[in-house]
Amino acid sequence: MSFVMVSEMAELSRDLAAFEAMRTELQQDHNVQWVVFFDAKLAGIYDSFNAAAADAVARFGRGPYLIRQVGAPEFTLPASVAYRIQ
Image 1 (cartoon, helix red, strand yellow):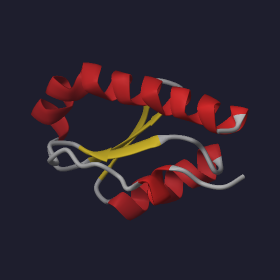
Image 2: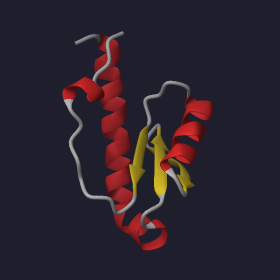
Image 3: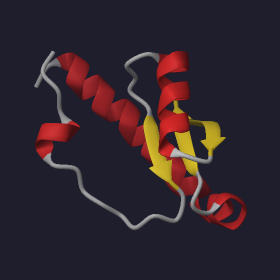
Image 4: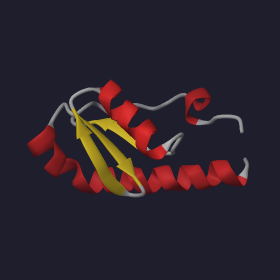
């Protein structure tokens, strides 16, 4: 695993921890909306995945950043999606 991939996974872990810390509040106020976390901070709230992704790419480039739907069931990404070749 390259340093870049380890670094990106650490950044995503921090974004996920920030999302988990805000989960209850987000579910109360923004259930079913989409959120973007970048640099362990809530970066935006959107009505669709496409809007969240477009804004995240425009603001943060290739990332990494976390995009999640508030209130959606947990899921696991296959390794082929979670990792990319540099």
